[in-house]
Length: 231
Image 1: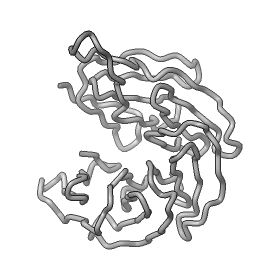
Image 2: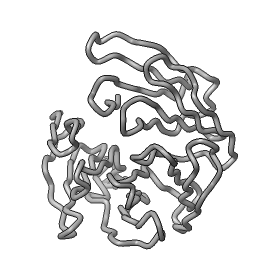
Image 3: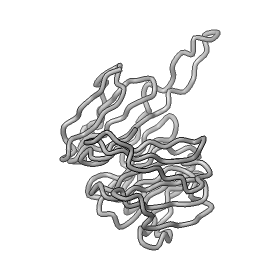
Image 4: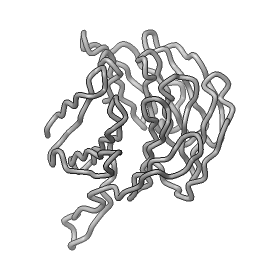
Protein backbone atom coordinates (compact mmCIF):
# COMPACT_ATOMS: atom_id res chain seq x y z
CA UNK A 1 0.00 0.00 0.00
CA UNK A 2 0.90 3.68 -0.38
CA UNK A 3 0.52 6.28 2.39
CA UNK A 4 -0.84 9.77 1.77
CA UNK A 5 1.00 12.93 2.91
CA UNK A 6 0.35 13.14 6.63
CA UNK A 7 -0.20 9.34 6.58
CA UNK A 8 -3.97 9.65 7.08
CA UNK A 9 -4.90 7.34 4.17
CA UNK A 10 -3.46 4.20 2.63
CA UNK A 11 -4.21 3.17 -0.96
CA UNK A 12 -3.67 -0.15 -2.73
CA UNK A 13 -4.58 -1.05 -6.32
CA UNK A 14 -5.07 -4.43 -7.99
CA UNK A 15 -5.10 -5.56 -11.60
CA UNK A 16 -7.60 -8.43 -11.43
CA UNK A 17 -10.12 -7.19 -10.65
CA UNK A 18 -9.09 -3.64 -11.55
CA UNK A 19 -9.88 -1.59 -8.45
CA UNK A 20 -8.40 0.81 -5.89
CA UNK A 21 -9.02 0.44 -2.14
CA UNK A 22 -8.65 3.29 0.38
CA UNK A 23 -8.16 2.75 4.13
CA UNK A 24 -8.24 5.13 7.09
CA UNK A 25 -4.92 4.55 8.91
CA UNK A 26 -6.33 5.83 12.21
CA UNK A 27 -9.25 3.42 12.41
CA UNK A 28 -7.60 0.75 10.18
CA UNK A 29 -10.91 0.40 8.35
CA UNK A 30 -11.56 0.20 4.63
CA UNK A 31 -13.29 3.45 3.65
CA UNK A 32 -14.32 2.59 0.10
CA UNK A 33 -13.36 0.77 -3.09
CA UNK A 34 -13.07 2.51 -6.46
CA UNK A 35 -13.96 0.09 -9.26
CA UNK A 36 -14.81 2.31 -12.21
CA UNK A 37 -14.15 -0.45 -14.80
CA UNK A 38 -10.39 0.04 -14.74
CA UNK A 39 -8.88 -1.61 -17.78
CA UNK A 40 -5.47 -1.87 -16.11
CA UNK A 41 -4.73 0.53 -13.23
CA UNK A 42 -1.19 1.72 -13.98
CA UNK A 43 -0.60 4.13 -11.13
CA UNK A 44 -2.02 5.94 -8.12
CA UNK A 45 -0.67 9.21 -6.72
CA UNK A 46 -1.69 11.60 -3.92
CA UNK A 47 -1.81 15.36 -4.25
CA UNK A 48 0.72 17.20 -2.06
CA UNK A 49 -2.04 18.39 0.31
CA UNK A 50 -3.28 14.82 0.80
CA UNK A 51 -6.83 15.64 -0.33
CA UNK A 52 -6.94 14.11 -3.81
CA UNK A 53 -5.98 10.87 -5.52
CA UNK A 54 -4.87 10.53 -9.14
CA UNK A 55 -5.39 7.21 -10.92
CA UNK A 56 -4.37 6.24 -14.44
CA UNK A 57 -5.18 3.30 -16.65
CA UNK A 58 -4.67 2.64 -20.35
CA UNK A 59 -7.20 5.22 -21.57
CA UNK A 60 -7.95 7.71 -18.80
CA UNK A 61 -6.81 9.89 -15.92
CA UNK A 62 -9.16 10.34 -12.95
CA UNK A 63 -8.88 12.65 -9.94
CA UNK A 64 -10.80 11.58 -6.80
CA UNK A 65 -11.75 13.24 -3.53
CA UNK A 66 -9.90 11.14 -0.95
CA UNK A 67 -12.39 11.76 1.86
CA UNK A 68 -15.49 10.38 0.12
CA UNK A 69 -14.23 8.66 -3.04
CA UNK A 70 -16.14 10.93 -5.42
CA UNK A 71 -14.63 11.67 -8.81
CA UNK A 72 -13.54 15.29 -9.27
CA UNK A 73 -12.14 15.10 -12.82
CA UNK A 74 -11.85 12.57 -15.64
CA UNK A 75 -9.75 12.93 -18.80
CA UNK A 76 -9.88 10.35 -21.57
CA UNK A 77 -6.74 9.98 -23.64
CA UNK A 78 -5.37 7.03 -25.64
CA UNK A 79 -1.89 8.13 -24.48
CA UNK A 80 -2.89 7.88 -20.81
CA UNK A 81 -1.23 4.50 -20.25
CA UNK A 82 1.80 4.84 -17.98
CA UNK A 83 2.67 6.50 -14.70
CA UNK A 84 1.49 9.94 -13.58
CA UNK A 85 1.97 12.40 -10.71
CA UNK A 86 0.51 15.66 -9.39
CA UNK A 87 2.62 18.80 -9.34
CA UNK A 88 3.13 20.10 -5.81
CA UNK A 89 0.99 23.16 -6.49
CA UNK A 90 -1.75 20.87 -7.85
CA UNK A 91 -2.08 22.83 -11.09
CA UNK A 92 -0.79 20.20 -13.50
CA UNK A 93 -0.14 16.49 -13.98
CA UNK A 94 2.98 14.83 -15.36
CA UNK A 95 2.80 11.44 -17.08
CA UNK A 96 5.29 9.21 -18.90
CA UNK A 97 4.52 6.62 -21.58
CA UNK A 98 5.83 5.50 -24.97
CA UNK A 99 9.02 7.53 -24.63
CA UNK A 100 7.26 10.85 -23.97
CA UNK A 101 6.81 12.85 -20.75
CA UNK A 102 3.62 14.92 -20.95
CA UNK A 103 2.68 17.89 -18.77
CA UNK A 104 -1.11 18.39 -18.52
CA UNK A 105 -3.39 21.04 -17.07
CA UNK A 106 -5.04 19.50 -13.99
CA UNK A 107 -8.33 21.32 -14.67
CA UNK A 108 -8.77 20.55 -18.37
CA UNK A 109 -6.43 17.62 -19.01
CA UNK A 110 -4.99 19.39 -22.05
CA UNK A 111 -1.32 18.69 -22.85
CA UNK A 112 0.80 21.79 -22.17
CA UNK A 113 4.21 20.33 -22.97
CA UNK A 114 5.81 17.15 -24.34
CA UNK A 115 9.37 16.03 -23.54
CA UNK A 116 10.82 13.33 -25.80
CA UNK A 117 12.93 10.81 -23.83
CA UNK A 118 13.44 8.08 -26.48
CA UNK A 119 13.00 5.54 -23.68
CA UNK A 120 9.83 3.45 -23.82
CA UNK A 121 9.63 2.15 -20.25
CA UNK A 122 9.30 5.00 -17.74
CA UNK A 123 8.40 4.07 -14.17
CA UNK A 124 7.77 5.98 -12.03
CA UNK A 125 7.66 9.71 -12.84
CA UNK A 126 7.65 12.21 -9.94
CA UNK A 127 7.98 15.97 -9.45
CA UNK A 128 10.29 17.72 -6.98
CA UNK A 129 9.08 20.13 -4.26
CA UNK A 130 8.76 23.54 -5.89
CA UNK A 131 7.87 21.82 -9.21
CA UNK A 132 11.30 22.51 -10.70
CA UNK A 133 12.46 18.99 -11.60
CA UNK A 134 11.03 15.73 -12.94
CA UNK A 135 12.61 12.44 -11.87
CA UNK A 136 11.87 9.35 -13.94
CA UNK A 137 13.29 5.83 -14.05
CA UNK A 138 13.88 4.28 -17.49
CA UNK A 139 14.45 0.62 -16.52
CA UNK A 140 18.22 0.87 -15.89
CA UNK A 141 18.66 4.65 -15.50
CA UNK A 142 17.21 7.27 -13.15
CA UNK A 143 17.05 10.62 -14.89
CA UNK A 144 16.48 14.13 -13.48
CA UNK A 145 15.17 16.82 -15.86
CA UNK A 146 14.24 20.47 -15.53
CA UNK A 147 10.48 20.74 -15.88
CA UNK A 148 10.62 24.08 -17.74
CA UNK A 149 13.07 22.97 -20.43
CA UNK A 150 13.13 19.18 -20.30
CA UNK A 151 16.93 19.33 -20.12
CA UNK A 152 18.71 16.48 -18.30
CA UNK A 153 20.55 17.75 -15.19
CA UNK A 154 21.52 14.40 -13.66
CA UNK A 155 21.33 10.73 -14.61
CA UNK A 156 22.76 7.63 -12.99
CA UNK A 157 22.35 3.84 -13.08
CA UNK A 158 19.37 2.44 -11.23
CA UNK A 159 21.46 0.32 -8.90
CA UNK A 160 21.72 -2.54 -8.41
CA UNK A 161 20.36 -3.13 -11.90
CA UNK A 162 20.55 -6.92 -12.03
CA UNK A 163 20.13 -9.79 -9.58
CA UNK A 164 20.68 -13.54 -9.79
CA UNK A 165 17.58 -15.60 -10.48
CA UNK A 166 19.00 -18.84 -9.09
CA UNK A 167 18.02 -20.60 -12.30
CA UNK A 168 20.99 -21.79 -14.39
CA UNK A 169 23.03 -18.84 -13.19
CA UNK A 170 20.70 -16.40 -14.92
CA UNK A 171 19.99 -12.75 -14.12
CA UNK A 172 16.89 -10.57 -14.19
CA UNK A 173 16.26 -6.84 -13.99
CA UNK A 174 15.85 -5.58 -10.41
CA UNK A 175 12.96 -3.18 -10.92
CA UNK A 176 12.43 0.03 -9.00
CA UNK A 177 9.55 -0.17 -6.53
CA UNK A 178 9.38 3.41 -5.22
CA UNK A 179 11.02 6.76 -5.94
CA UNK A 180 10.53 9.91 -3.85
CA UNK A 181 12.06 13.35 -3.29
CA UNK A 182 12.78 14.58 0.23
CA UNK A 183 10.74 17.59 1.34
CA UNK A 184 13.63 19.99 0.79
CA UNK A 185 14.28 18.57 -2.68
CA UNK A 186 17.92 17.79 -1.86
CA UNK A 187 17.63 14.00 -1.80
CA UNK A 188 16.13 11.34 -4.05
CA UNK A 189 15.23 8.04 -2.37
CA UNK A 190 14.88 4.82 -4.37
CA UNK A 191 13.59 1.44 -3.17
CA UNK A 192 13.92 -1.71 -5.27
CA UNK A 193 11.84 -4.89 -5.27
CA UNK A 194 15.00 -6.73 -4.26
CA UNK A 195 14.68 -4.69 -0.99
CA UNK A 196 17.71 -2.39 -1.31
CA UNK A 197 17.14 1.29 -0.46
CA UNK A 198 19.40 4.03 -1.85
CA UNK A 199 19.67 7.77 -1.15
CA UNK A 200 20.98 10.20 -3.79
CA UNK A 201 22.46 13.59 -2.85
CA UNK A 202 21.26 15.65 -5.83
CA UNK A 203 23.70 18.50 -5.18
CA UNK A 204 26.83 16.36 -4.81
CA UNK A 205 25.50 13.78 -7.32
CA UNK A 206 26.48 10.92 -5.03
CA UNK A 207 24.45 7.90 -3.97
CA UNK A 208 24.80 5.40 -1.15
CA UNK A 209 23.10 2.24 0.07
CA UNK A 210 21.02 3.12 3.14
CA UNK A 211 19.67 -0.36 3.84
CA UNK A 212 19.89 -3.71 2.06
CA UNK A 213 16.70 -5.24 3.50
CA UNK A 214 14.03 -2.52 3.32
CA UNK A 215 10.37 -3.41 2.84
CA UNK A 216 9.08 0.17 2.52
CA UNK A 217 9.84 3.73 3.57
CA UNK A 218 7.89 6.88 4.37
CA UNK A 219 8.70 10.54 5.03
CA UNK A 220 7.28 12.74 7.79
CA UNK A 221 4.87 15.62 7.08
CA UNK A 222 7.77 17.93 6.23
CA UNK A 223 9.26 15.27 3.99
CA UNK A 224 12.72 15.37 5.56
CA UNK A 225 12.72 12.53 8.11
CA UNK A 226 12.92 9.05 6.70
CA UNK A 227 11.25 6.06 8.38
CA UNK A 228 12.22 2.64 6.99
CA UNK A 229 10.29 -0.58 7.44
CA UNK A 230 12.66 -3.55 7.36
CA UNK A 231 11.85 -6.91 5.78
